[in-house]
Image 1 (tube, rainbow, N blue to C red):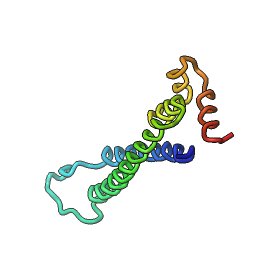
Image 2 (image 1 turned 30 degrees about the vertical axis):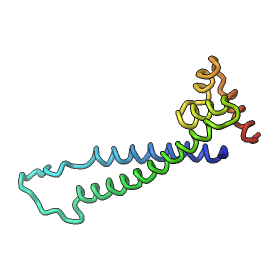
Image 3 (image 1 turned 135 degrees about the vertical axis):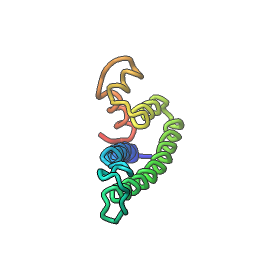
Image 4 (image 1 turned 180 degrees about the horizontal axis):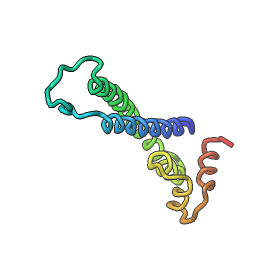
Length: 131
């Protein structure tokens, strides 16, 4: 496990949130299947906006599900790594910041009881040999 693996995990989490927001937007703007101003049912064609949006939602959902499955596996790997790190303090920082999504400041408050944005960040960088 490297610090780049942890950063990639965080970036993927951000991508997943963006896809979820995109999917919500597609659902929110989609007309209902029976919304027909004339009151009569119509034959749906490939240029039908509802069909196009439904296809877009399916594509986003498939991509999202694949990313979520991959992300679950990564989270398990990171958690397993953090549980077997020789320094339990480092393991806690990894779980809080990378898995839990805490900011560096929140991580420091949780572990040490005071706000310091850089303290935990420096510990992780030192642990992984990044300075």
